[in-house]
Length: 145
Image 1 (spheres, rainbow, N blue to C red):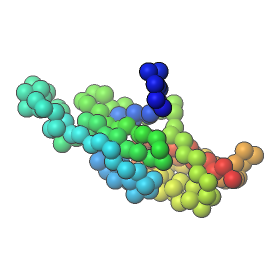
Image 2 (image 1 turned 90 degrees about the vertical axis):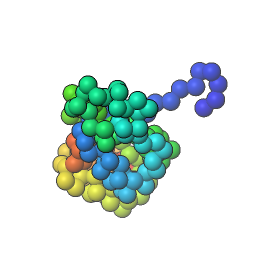
Image 3 (image 1 turned 45 degrees about the horizontal axis):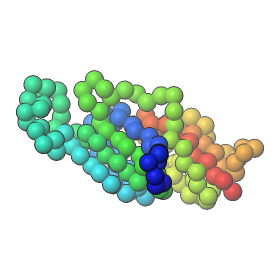
Image 4 (image 1 turned 30 degrees about the vertical axis):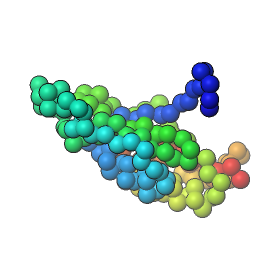
């Protein structure tokens, strides 16, 4: 998108609470995500001075990460002390052409998490399902064929 009024929207999930590195690895494996940026609190140019008075800050935690998934960015963070909350009221939607690929991804994302709506045929999709991954992030998986 070019021009002075260019706009894009990317979800930013900051609720990984010390497990962001693990989530990044899972999403890279399952969704073929590519890491664009990964910064730890220790990467802050003045980390020692900035966080000296805040020992609750884990310098090895992910301060900010950006993944590229199918042409869309997903931004992620472990969250700072007191900011990581359980995600609710939304899900990350994946539109997938292949029913078998949709099932594979759904199974992998729900492993260690929970199934909200099992993968099944609906009036609007040959395969549709909703789950929460092991980090509590909601996913909606939909096939278009």
